[in-house]
Length: 322
Image (cartoon, rainbow, N blue to C red; front, top):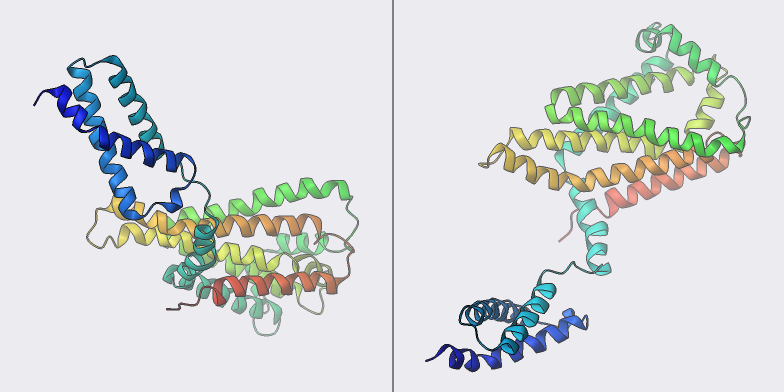
């Protein structure tokens, strides 16, 4: 059979591919079944071969031009970017991400280490009789003096024009803490040590400021209450994401270390996204609400709502289900 006759016999396939391209160009991708999409890919490959054959044997230019346009249209539809699919992202953000975070052993380990050491350190610092010099040994006398001086006056004295600047500073500062926990977790042991340091240091600060003989403690807790849930949770998740990466190159499950690290990095991305969002929300609250003279019950209500949202997302939505 001559080449011209062979291509002519395939004209029906071209028309079928042309019809599928029209359906896809009308954004009716959802109407195509998996069998249709498989057929579309097969017709596209065949049209590419027909175009190469027609071009090599110098067939009439209208036929070559038609195949050029057809292959170009099919290529654009086959490799075009996906449109935003709300249902898909709803499934990912409200089901897959919280369940993955909830069942992540590295996050569970980071949670236990941080809150266990935080509570123990706060208890020791708040009890002057149990370990009288604990707070001074952890925080140092200079840092304790700075804490008392910073919160010696009632909140609300800062100009409102400074709120945006301070919110940006808090975003930068909080992100730095999170990145340090995340990056050091790649080496596992340094990540655990940094997490341990942050938990002990913060716990000692909270415990010392809770002492009845520290007048500045009232202003301190009025400042940290509103943004505390988001910020402290973000620190835990940062450490958990870093540990997850570190375990990726330690436990490869038969893969190369590079491949295992890439796979683990993809699994850690939901954690990183949650950390970024929580640090951002904490910085906004710390910049615009925490330093104001708003009544303390209002700030406490924000903390309760924040904690409720965190528990709902990470525990209720994250709890494994069939």
